[in-house]
Length: 210
Image 1 (cartoon, helix red, strand yellow):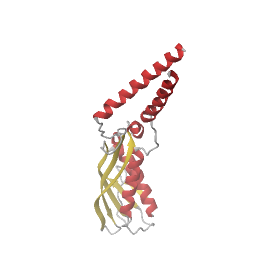
Image 2 (cartoon, helix red, strand yellow; image 1 turned 90 degrees about the vertical axis):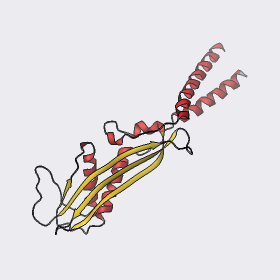
Image 3 (cartoon, rainbow, N blue to C red; image 1 turned 45 degrees about the horizontal axis):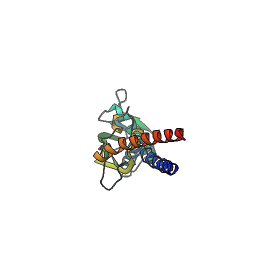
């Protein structure tokens, strides 16, 4: 009887451990932001007939040091894929020359991550949604406006709450999302830890008594 009880407890521990330590490889929030900006810029460049012999000057008109590097990186990738071979970032030491060239300016508006618990999901799952919004204007070599618009991109999926700390980067605040946690989840996790600990202690002393 005691052996059967020990087997049942071991099975229970295995189930509880899998619930607490489920680990599925998912994209980080940083990777998702990169993909969304690349997609947004690529869609914008589809409206441009590229003359690869002309340079493209670009300017970030809303400075945000924590994410500027990422946006510039994805802008350059999408512009090069669109066919531009010469890209020049406007800055304090760079002046827009009065000659034939393309000009792009952009401004980041929204960068956020939200986690939300849903009644249809298990307690250890939450819905993740990543949103970006940015303004972009593109001028052709004759200074005519080819595009002036606000672009929105978003991504959503379902993740294990235990993975949240792994998909965020605490050094990059825009990758840290707002999370909601249900009352049931708050009560269940410490209860499972307590039950597992108690079961291990019971098995240990049972084997010693044998």
